[in-house]
Image 1 (cartoon, helix red, strand yellow):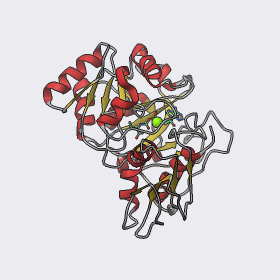
Image 2 (cartoon, rainbow, N blue to C red):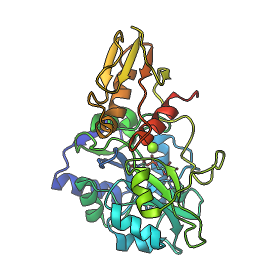
Image 3 (cartoon, rainbow, N blue to C red):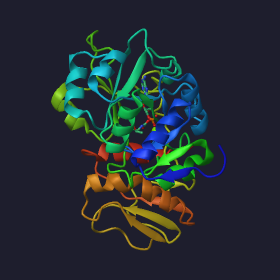
Image 4 (cartoon, rainbow, N blue to C red):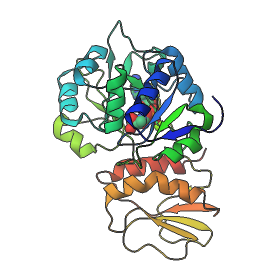
Length: 323
Ligand code: TXA
Ligand code: MG
């Protein structure tokens, strides 16, 4: 690998080439409906190790295996009744289930970072689905950013984040949802433990509660349950402040709603109509733009803590966290 990565349209021949790269243990960036993923063969330890290296990701932080259908998923992990109901309702789509691994398993042990569980997701994006189907094996795919940085929602963002660390980038246009999947731990369902929301995401807590009844959140300082939920994440290079109601000329303002304060050096409005779905789709791209604007800091207006706002605020709090 050398030089900038190639960005190609996801034609049939590009998918065939992607499969060749995957078979050889290489890495392909893929569009999904949430964010772009850095994909490698989830059954190949060498490919999984290459993903950790390309992202500089700590090896205690496990990866999601992306699967093509529920039948195959059920060979990889133990699905209790609630896990099955969630999969039937939300797959393909932006929901990741953490379940107990079956043994023996074709999945790399490194993928699970030493845990007895595995995170599974069936993505809804046509290109991701087509590639997984054609390849015929699950793909490990974390978000296609360097560890701790802002997630990538376009092919160009992936190239900027990972450079020569990726062999090929399939360009599916801007990510439709723009925020990562919701992660729910149901690995102790058969012991009667309540489902645990490890990461708020594109499937909202209200959507989950409809099926699950109740859902817990990990207690602070329970690193084994959610190894990826570091307090600092999605971090721009510039300092970021939240709940901004006024703004200075040296700041880039990430606004929300019809009446943002005036005076910012740059204003990027997540949604003028106050629509949270539109706001989520713009979030990471605007954080990148604000960060690259040359202004000294980023200010973000308050976002309501309802529906998708919970996932947006989760990302913003981590982006603002001191590091
Ligand atoms: O939307 C998404 O989920 C994107 C697209 C590409 O599919 N992927 C993604 O992957 O966000 P990543 O690696 O950036 O985030 C996966 C999250 C991390 O917080 C990780 O710690 C958690 O899932 N995770 C993975 N396996 C786990 C496991 N066995 N137990 C607990 N948490 C797990
Ligand atoms: Mg990530």
